[in-house]
Image (tube, rainbow, N blue to C red; front, side, top):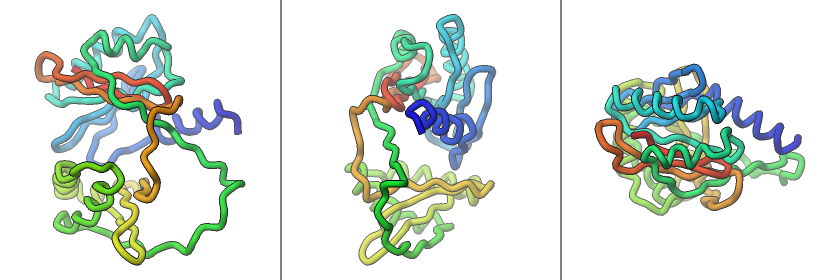
Length: 228
């Protein structure tokens, strides 16, 4: 596959038709957003904009999240249009976060994988401690706030917040989430965090409840911004 084909496939599966546990997917004329059922921030995950439509679309997303009193981030990828989307977001109060990278593995070059470790389903919010241990180790930060949000989502929407920690000898390695449709996603706790590579994004935030607190814009493969 060419780079363009990989990005097209990624956009289709992970952005345009993705679902996020604990969030409601909303499709607008030129954007796709996710709005949390309970607490937490939302995000604009995909957009199809140009120089003539970008400003109005950004303003509309700000007003949409302001109406539901939620902060949000705007995921900006290096191949998103218009090319100055990040600058337009920053001009409206978004603040750029860290640049993240999108990593793609050619399966033809993969060595044989070890046997699958056992997988256990967590359906009780009280059992999320194992997931927190993985996230603490991967991101190097205290993830208790995220665990509290996951617990609230599990209680609010049931299976949408269920989490599988993958375990082997020792602590769990990789948590994942599934939504009621059965679609699952897995994030590996063994892989290092990848930063500041072209083709990734950055994060920012701003508050829809009043003047922007932090805004967000992104560049690279998957940047993000949070909306005023």
